[in-house]
Amino acid sequence: MARFRPYDIYQGVGKWNDGDRVIGSLTVVSGGVGIAVAIAMFAGSAAFWPLLIVSIILGIVIAVLSRDELKEWIAKCYFSMGVTEIRKVNAAKGKTRPDPFTTTKDELIAYKEAVGA
Image (cartoon, rainbow, N blue to C red):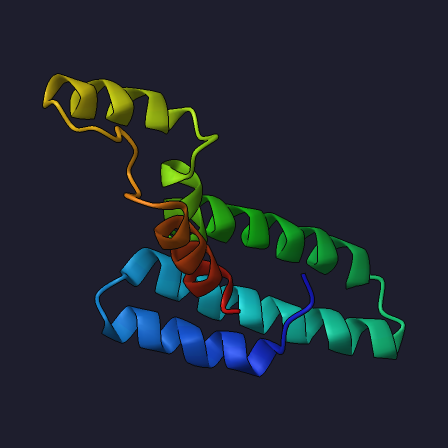
């Protein structure tokens, strides 16, 4: 997950200002650690590997804690396990198509928006 680390810091500050303090602070720290990893690598420092491991762990924590459009789409898509519950609720309400998306076209539009296509 190679990203431009100063931009991570910028994004983290934006998330912090938007009220998402946990993800914002983790993103800022991740950006700082990523910059430190690059410096340690070019300097040949022994701190490279521990910093790299911390960077990877931070990335995983951020991915798990963040709620983004792709995760929302996955939760609503046809093959999602969460859709089973939605189908039961919608079927009980008498809807003819018990899916979160009314058409396949709506599902594809949501997917394209989620991945930025």
